[in-house]
Length: 113
Length: 115
Image 1 (cartoon, chains in turn yellow, orange):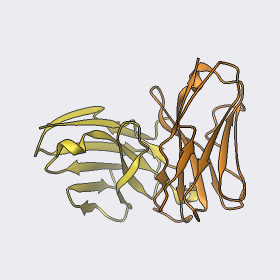
Image 2 (cartoon, chains in turn blue, yellow; image 1 turned 90 degrees about the horizontal axis):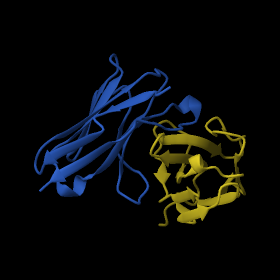
Image 3 (spheres, chains in turn cyan, yellow; image 1 turned 135 degrees about the vertical axis):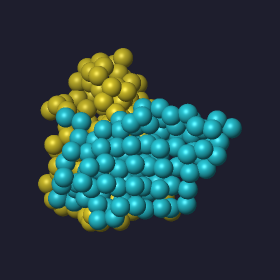
């Protein structure tokens, strides 16, 4: 059972453009929603995270939008740069379940100069 | 300070052999997680340790997989009688406290190839 669905699988955007990645979850017990960035040969690194009592969180060029009723959340990367080219994973976890992360399938983002 | 380290970085083994993968978490982190990243299954949870509590083994795919954490620090993931479908990158992560939204820091992973 895929509890977190992520789309699109891949994305190409021009430098300066906006990258948008969407995720949907099923388990209403999830209480933490992080986004991870992964470069080839490296482990995932936390980019930004949100809790369900907040509808939006912005950190620099990265924004999470969260819709609790729809059980959806998204990552917006503004002014995309070639250095943002990476694979992005959304995830969700529940404190009651030990904070173990359930990941989406990943989105490979390519920013063209 | 030092991050999460894993060894070896790469491991090639023959089908049927046993392998051990090591994880050194960030000093002082009480929670330690193992995940597996493969082309077919994406990133999936395997097992986690929190302090002295019994580990949550709910993600282990078969009884060939086991893990231990000694002294609340270093962890070893053991795969017995390896199969080709075990080929994947095995990632370890640690976090400092057992609270909602606590960041998990990932190591670089061990790439396991079973021939």
